[in-house]
Image (cartoon, rainbow, N blue to C red; front, top):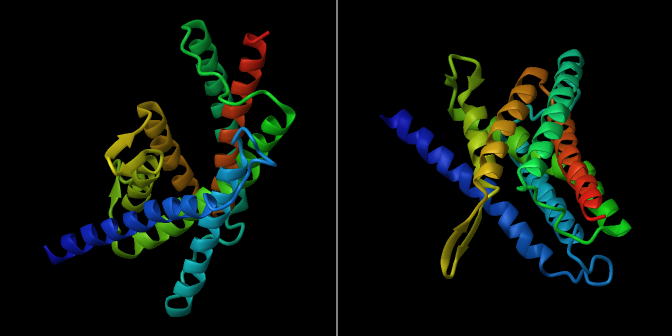
Length: 241
């Protein structure tokens, strides 16, 4: 019973950190004025937030390693496994994304790119997805989260195919794609986005654990975002003509 309670409290504590730091980073990002560089709000604010949240977790890791050195995946690990995972994921995800975009267009449920199709908005958004989204979020939700969860939680799920730490980290990653407000209390989320983030999180985590490196999940994450946003931009441009 004590072990179960300890695990629950540990998950709740880490969830608070994993969900709280990005919110804090958003508050820090709010302190800056982006009107001159990004008047449409397409990339600057979210880029600053991701830089700050990554910096905070890097500080956490450095400080924690003073007391308890752990492997977070700062290295290329098993290159053969990592490369194979990234390549397979890219091919399957690209094909699936193309089909899903085509279906949304045919069923009139396609959601257009939410910003004006200017060069700065397109370059800024794609640069964020390529350089910051994957590295920042995988550092947090795979390298830090799975490592910390694994200290206490050793079980495996899905008939032993995935560690409980990976599953929990993926669920928290899905929750991170929900918006919360407390005055008044409200929860805003896109069910498809939350489920998609959770499922992708499982694959990112599986790659992280098998390759022993955070770099391959970072690539996968950035590639998936680039593909989704890129296809959305292309489709929006074609449909708006």
